[in-house]
Image 1 (cartoon, rainbow, N blue to C red):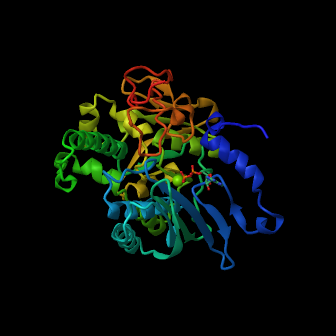
Image 2: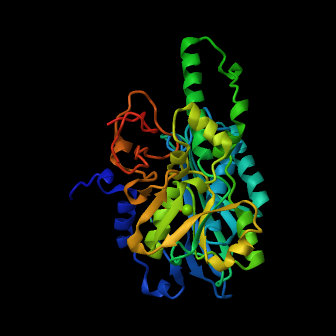
Image 3: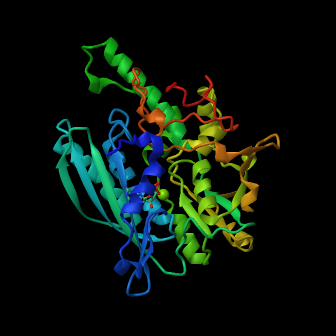
Length: 396
Ligand code: ADP
Ligand code: MG
C-alpha cells in the first residue's frame, strides 16, 4: 500500500477520494437528492418535503482552546455551527445529537456547562437535542454534533444554481470572528507568560481586561446561525439561487458557489461589510481588514446569490449587503480593490485543513485554534510568504 500524506492532496482532495468509495447505492438514489458536496446532504421525504442532514466536529487545540473559551459558549457554538449549515440550505433545523470525547482533565461539572450552553441555544433555535454518544479521549476534548432539518422542495437552496448577473449578497458583517481570535490568542499568550513568571500564582485569580474587544470576541466565541435570514426568505418567498455559510471566509466560499454554479464573479472591496471594531483590531495588529473579511472565516454568516428581480424585496431585510455580481465563468473570480484594480481570487485561498503548513513543527506553540491552516496567502494574489503576511506566525 502506498503512503500518500494527507497534506499532499489537502482536505478537499481527501474528501474527493473518500466520496469515490462511498458512492450511493442504487436503492438510495431515488430519494437521495444530494450527497457529498454541499452544506448538507438532501433526502426526499415521503410527504414531499426535503430532509437536510449535516455534521460538524470541534476538537480541542484545533478548533478551540479551553484557556480562552468559556464552556457554555463552546456548547452553544457546537450547535450554532451546525444550524448554520442547515440555514445554508434555506432549511429549518429540527433535531440534533451531541457526541463527546472526554479527556480526564474534564469534570462532570464542566461537561454540564457545555450542555447548558448547547441546550440554551438549541431552545433559541427551536431545536431538540435527542441523543449522542460518550467516550473517553486521550487527545483532549472532542465535540461532534449531527443535525437534521427540513424544507419545502421548492425552497431548497444548493451551492449550485447561481446565474450570470445574479447579485452576490452577505448577511451581517465579516472578518469580525478572526479579529476576535487574534485578540484571544494574544490574551492567551499574556496569560501563559504571566503564569510562567509567577509559578505560585492562583490561576483562578487571573483577570483579563478584554472589555474593549467585546464585540469581536463575542462573534468568535458565540456566533449565531442566521435563522432570521432563512425566516425572511420563507416569509417573502425569495429563494436564493445559491447559498453557503461562511466557515472558511468569503474568498473561499465564493469559489465554492462559482465552481458549483459554473459562473465567474466580481466582488468589490468597498462593499465588504466590515465593522469599525474589526478594523480597529486589524489596525492594532498592523493587518489588513479586507484580508480578515475574505480569509478569516468562522463568521457563520450566509453568502448567497439572488436574481436582480428580488433586489427590492431583499432590501426589506436590514442586515444584508450586496457585495458583487455573478459573471461568465471566463471572467474568473475577482475582487475589485479600493483603487479599481481587479485581483484574481482563484490564486488566493481560504483556510483548508491538511495543507503542508498544518503539519509543520511549531516550537512557539503558536498553533491556531481555529482549525485553520493559515496559508498566509496574500490577497494581492502573489501567493508568496512574505514577512508581513498576517498569519505570519507559521513560517516555512
Ligand atoms: P462545511 O464547511 O459546510 O461543513 P465541509 O467543507 O466540511 O462543509 O464539507 C464539504 C462536503 O464534504 C460536505 O458535503 C460534507 O458532507 C463532505 N465531507 C466532509 N468530510 C467528509 C468525510 N470525512 N466523509 C464523507 N464526506 C465528508
Ligand atoms: Mg457550510
